[in-house]
Image (tube, rainbow over all chains, first blue to last red; front, side, top):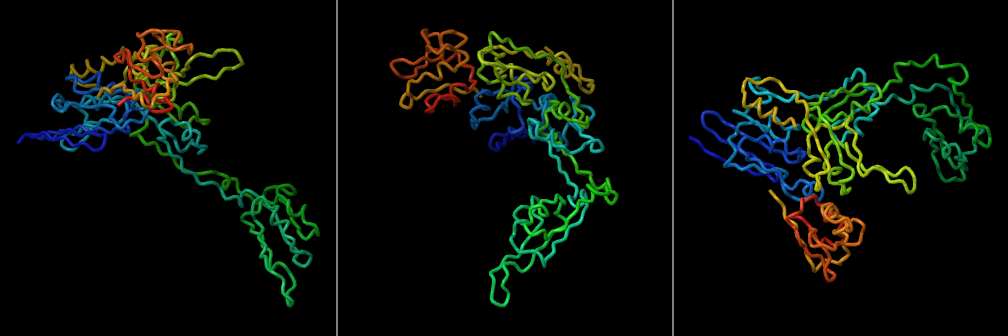
Length: 352
Length: 78
């Protein structure tokens, strides 16, 4: 029994056919970067890239690509060349990404947790919000050492120390005075886990009721353990959304991130043709392009600047540019081998 | 799925921001980018008698720039 079904969930699509084997093509619109590589690769011209500039910039409720169910032969080539995981092809419920017979683009992004110092620079820089750094900060109390004591006999319950304390370590139990207890506070407590022995309270106390000393300043840190200073944590990269752009690798201060890109290439912008509309800046999934600020009054900067360190040569900017001012050349493609000459040819045709 | 450039003259203030912002217009006629407004119907759109009018919409590449700049949603892609 051969049947074709098409199920549309919001902007996503799913085309499947079941015969001897079940073949499915699944598309996730929120992951698609609109590069159009699938459209260029499809051997039967079933995929059409939408008006990508307008879709991305105006938030139109339109899918970035559409696939003609009647033309699609469910070969899976589009899912292999998709630089993100927007297209997934399954045969009998198994993704072809897990099958040795099918070629794969070679790319990766990794963060080495042994080297990572959990500074979160990569998390902030990632243009696709694909990185999550979870970190446990050291206990503040284990980084400082000292002594503090409030002489409650001398204390006049003014509350100045409580207000001054930058670490919120001092709490006064405020109360109204009564004839049998004519004081304005029932107790004053110092939380030694919060106190950093900065001595602000001691200096600001009007009656010198506080005795405090920072041991670090006076005798050294012999009672502290350097192991306790460390921030620990873990890193996570969402490989479904990650575009392997290299921002994490470039920004990491300790070289903990390693990115391997699929394409080698060259990005050039014709500054004379560019009209600075910003379509390329908005579409680029890798935050490669930006409008430079003028360095000096009256000095005209370049219209749009690019940093190829972060470019994956997907070509989205080139296809969105309304005045053809951008040229993206792909000179090399890393992929695992395939025995199929036609697949090899189609993948190699992405070189320009 | 190709989108289409549309205008609604009822909303249009005739400010001409879309005419100036459009990168295709500017590449057709430099005067447009200078802010003088278009003097040729070769451009995609132009303000005529105080309202926006499409002249060569087939040149539109659907980049969405006009829509981003229009203060009254009088020009859009759908």
